[in-house]
Length: 99
Image (tube, rainbow, N blue to C red):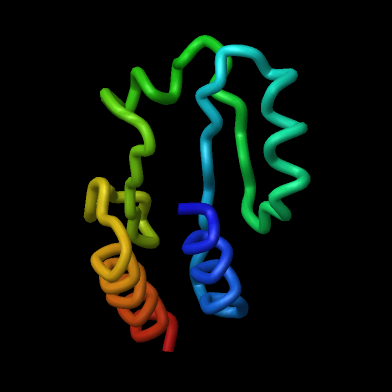
């Protein structure tokens, strides 16, 4: 999914969009060597003891949540074109509200 994430962030540049990622590796030391060589262009957190995955009920990885401007989860686990459609729709909605 990494190339798709990169292209999505680039395509949404300058628009009301943010891609936030949570790394669920048990060992924090494994996060940096994987993230930086891949040229990650989004914010990335380490989940440590799993608090974030517990709060959001994540049962498998990767897990994707699409939130609107109010922080309401509007879609869970879309992939590919379905993810693009969900993001495009919410970005247009946010832009209309802002105008």
